[in-house]
Image 1: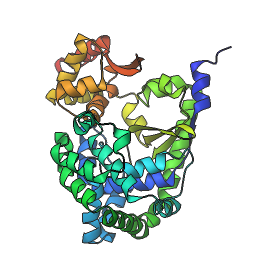
Image 2: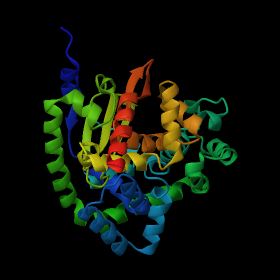
Image 3: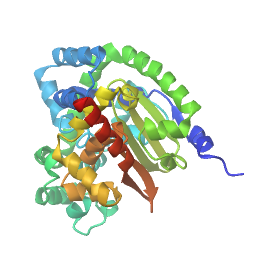
Image 4: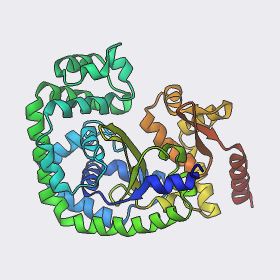
Length: 369
């Protein structure tokens, strides 16, 4: 007898703490602190006191030089991994969690050419065809001279345009680039993370136990309503959920093919339930109005009113990156205005028209009564 969807999800999904992953997310959080605050304001949540204290402490402990290097490698876009993409690949290609110190040491053996190639992919993954100009990506890996020429001739997407010059600098000096990022990782670990890692782990594991229990009770419902994803994507990919204190809110699914098979990791925000859980009528109305304060989200809904679209279609139609599609869709997910369904090997966004009518009626009731 074929196992049910809930049985498959329970078999393939586990909750575990990955210190190396939390370490790298924490570096991005410090580098993109202003972005994080703006996102929290948009999502109508408050960044918790521990995250605030960590951010302030990091900015005090790190030297001006280290802060500049942190901005260089991590400070471009918290949602769109760019020059830091290779670090995520290095960690998430391993199905087992790692501690931060061991992972940093293991990175010494990784060739600079490999890391630079992953940086290029991180910056251009949503414009890869335009970058390659008909060439095969696998054949280009490691050819830093040709990659540099292609990068110079192809501006990245507007939202990460500022990464082009730093990327060209890294491609021109790969070994020096490796020395720089290795020094940055060690410095951040020694000066900042080591003082906070126990608190990060305790908070994350406490939340993880709660989310694991919620998942175990109703796996499919958890994936749809709190992870905001299509359960089918986890029926064939063994995936570990890392509940992240540093991420605060988020549902980043990273899936890599390795020699051992597919490996999946989810960076799951510690406060996801606060955002995706039930909200009071007034809060829903406020978020509903906030959702459409940005014209792109209105265009998003009008696009789905015509028919379901997959992510790249939406990105092209609205002139934004796939990462921005994810960002804007979160507002609509919070309100259950959209859902995702797998069709023809793609995930399509669908508009919940009935829910839209309900929210319009609720808004009228709150504002007119």
